[in-house]
Image (tube, rainbow, N blue to C red; front, side, top):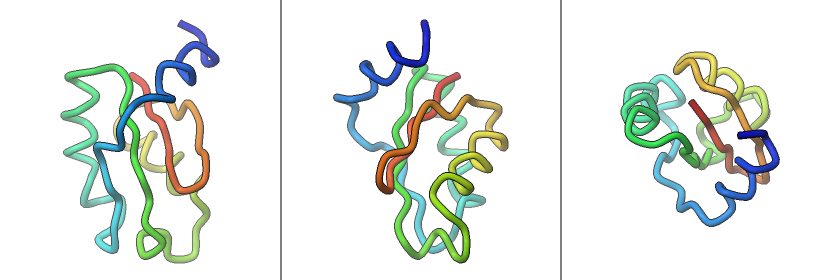
Length: 82
């Protein structure tokens, strides 16, 4: 499945992971579990989670930690695929 197909599929997904003030460390396990159950997961980054980084940087870091592909970031939301 290519990136464009994955973006279309992710469009209607609900956010199931919220990254808050505890940062990405706090959601690595949860995102890992969800990616094991389904191939696409949408996460929302709250402003408090970012510190001095951008959404793109934080999402890329999180994707790397769970060994997933970052499909897209839009606003404060990111889509991960494994």
